Image (cartoon, each protein chain N blue to C red):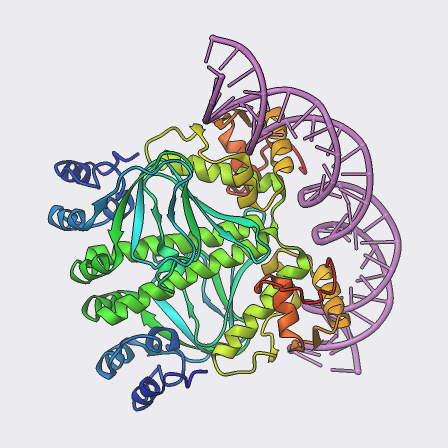
Length: 256
Length: 256
DNA sequence: CGTAATTTTGACGCGCGTCAAAGCTTGTGG
DNA sequence: CCACAAGCTTTGACGCGCGTCAAAATTACG
């Protein structure tokens, strides 16, 4: 998958930089950044020591300084609601970028915490912005990523607002599937980095409901799961359930 | 409200341009754009003939060329799901910008239709991007707006995912309140540009539920509504219900 | 190996979606 | 200016999905 645009990968892999290890995948890969541009980008990126599980990258209210690219591990972002409840707002896997929601106010609107041992690249935002002004390709790419985020959020909003609990879970699993797949990992067999509780919170469901759903999907033969390991055994059926496919008279398990 | 930063308003009002009539409010106002910059921006903006209610600005799949600023009227954006259902993804009021979700794919992911007679400014994106490369303030502002959008979407996702129907409606009403308020209109008395059906669809509720909710909120003395006219009579109580305020031992109508 | 956190299971009730039908607008043509 | 049709909005009755409470089983971690 990551191999698809051969020429550029070769170009990038000549540089021992942040892009090579996939962390700036989103910023570098899909667009017209020359090797020199990538090197400039690499120069402003700061590596950070790996974070331990449970450590916070930033907290709500912290001053916004940098955005971060996940190199390995995983983060969750969450807010604390007025009544003190934790509300999980997102999960961030390797190759993805965190902190874009802080640009507008200058402070982070949510917390970011490591779900497992996690290493990151820090990208100071003023520097990135400055560089983007000089490198049109980078500016475009930055806008693309943010647009992507808006689009994805809208999708998720749709997904979560009007679908049943089962559909929500299926949609979330397919999302992880394609995100792992996009990084060259298996799209059908992976390890969820978050607890069931975090996942249910994210989807706006009770943990008990999640548990029952996993069992039901397993009984329907759509997946096998033990602990955090998940094996999706019928992607196309799941896509039909998620409404990601026109459903041309395939047999549906329910509501046919 | 719009009067708050006196110097800049004077500066802008000297120019007979798109900013003066509020349509590029988001791009111009809150940041360090000089008069010359604003004039350059104004030059790339194209006015368009007002659109009739029901007319489409763009459709899903259309090539992405421009983003649009609403000058007057209102738009709704929606997608058609795999099973043919319309899914309302957003409403866009004067001063707001539409089309940002199309940047990443190069095609519009949803439909945009006028809810009433609506006039717009068209901003060709390649030109805007080019200009943003030359005017750092504009680039920053563009990123700010997109970040704002991401933040707002996340909020909405939170709102809609785990709140009751009543809370969803209250949150939506407060959102309109502050958006109208930010444009100098009354934050407590306004006309909703969309039908109840569109609003319920947006919030992931049945129209019947919406109807019952409006009645209930009215019975609780939180608002008065007739048709699309809405009068919010107890903003602070609504904020408490929406969880936008710590709720320091105020009397709550329910669940105390 | 022990304690705490997480996940699972079951029972139960309520919120809200669904179906059905009655008002109420809105627009159009005579 | 009124009549009629096609939406919208409202109201009521009913049932199911999923949240909640409670407790057991399992896992994680020091």
